[in-house]
Image 1 (cartoon, rainbow, N blue to C red):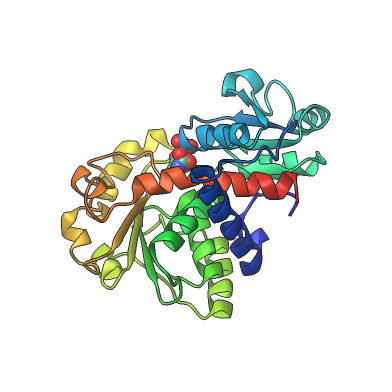
Image 2: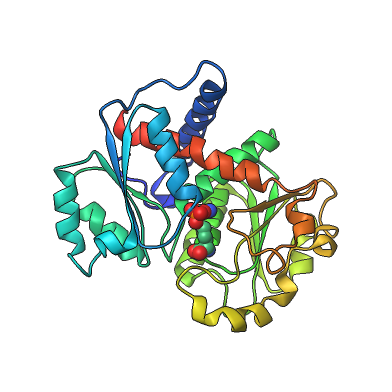
Length: 306
Ligand code: CP
Ligand code: NVA
C-alpha cells in the first residue's frame, strides 16, 4: 500500500487487514497505551476546505504514535493557484514523510500522488471520502458480529461519502441500497464499479427514489448533508428537493427495530437528520467520529511503517 486515495484501490483482504489493525490500535489506545512507532515522522496536512474530524483525528493519530503533523490552511497553500500541484508535491517530498489533502477536485489528489514519492492520503474530495468509509466500517464491525447479510441503506445525495461507502460495502459483503432524488444518484462510473464488485461478492446493490421502501428491512440507515462543501449556492434548491429524504423518527420506524443510524458529520440537524434521531438510542454518530482517529492510525501505520 503506497497511498490511500480510493476504497476500491484495495482488495477485501487488504481492507480487512487495515480494519483489524485499526481495532488493535484502538484497544492499545485504551489499555497499554500507544507505542511511538512514528517517532521522527511528519505528516503535511493540506486543506482546501474546513474540517473538524479529519484534521483533528489525523493530527491526534500522529501525536499519539509519536509523530508530528503540519497543518496548512486553504489560504496558506492555495493549491494550484499560488503554486502548481506538481511543484507543491515535489517540494513537500523533500520535507515530510506523507501528505494528507482535502481538495475540491479529486484529480488534484491524483496529481499530488503522481508527483511525489511519499504516501498521499485523500482527506475528502468532491468525488470520494475513503477515510470516512474505513472508520465507518470499523464502527459497523464493532456493532455487529457478522457483516454478511447486513443491509445498509443510504438516504440522500449520491455524494462523496455515499461513493466510498457503497464501494466499501460491496468489498466487505454488505448489501447496499441508496435512495436519492432523480438527478442526485451515485455517478454512473461509481454505479458500474459498485455493481461489478457487488456481483463478485454476491451482495445486492439497489438504487431507488423512495426512501421508505429503501429503509424497510434495513439494519443500518446512513445519511449525510444534502449540500456538500462547495455546493453552497444550491442549498435552497436542495433543501426543497430532499425534504422527503429526512432521516426522522417516522422513517427510522420503517426499518428494523434495532437499526443503526449513522452520519459522517457535520450534521445539519433539522435537515437531513432530526435531533431526535441523531441523539436517539439507534444513533452511533459519535462512535463513528471517534473511530476516525483509530482508523487514521491504521492508515498512517500501514503507509509509514509496513
Ligand atoms: N466527517 C468528516 O470528514 O468531518 P470533517 O469535515 O469535520 O473532517
Ligand atoms: N458530503 C460532505 C461530507 C463532509 C464530511 C461534504 O463533502 O461536504
